[in-house]
Length: 182
Ligand code: GDP
Ligand code: MG
Image (cartoon, rainbow, N blue to C red; front, side, top):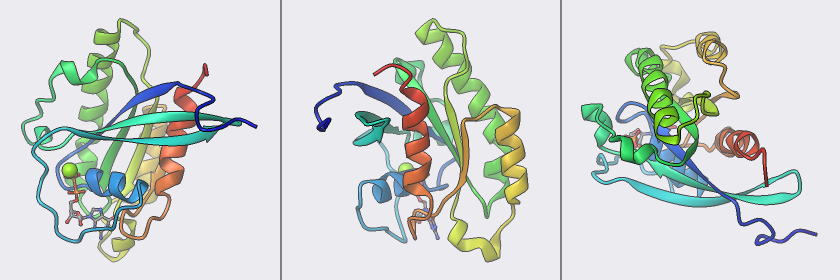
């Protein structure tokens, strides 16, 4: 049986989307840190590592939390170097964060392709977060799915960093699709 060290492959993933959609909360939930109701915007770029099993092998995702820069829409291209996948997050209770998704996807795809010198779309998973607040829902599931289809995303999930719903599944999907060789 394959152990945790059987595969050394690590894959860099960027988590992007507007401020306050829950990017940091999703990462915290993924690594089993307690959910925080009130958080301050992070100022620096941070990352977590997490191993996933894909077809019997362990692969490690190196998940970069883009924090703070989103306010200025100025993630520098340096951050994109080596990126193998993207998770784009919106807040189902905030339509504006949904409307900004295409902007995020197009600009990041362009820059990642440019810096990696590979002009193919980067594997993408779209996440509508805060589904526990569905009484305040402003974006229909169907709309999220439609956008995911339009951008040929490998996955679309509605998640809650608060309850944990679908969080592992969303990252697992990315792990699956970034690892064509391992
Ligand atoms: P970021 O700017 O995208 O990193 O967003 P944060 O992770 O800092 O979250 C912003 C705010 O939304 C915080 O007050 C979180 O507690 C809250 N939040 C994040 N995810 C969820 C969620 O799934 N459900 C609820 N109810 N609140 C959330
Ligand atoms: Mg954050």
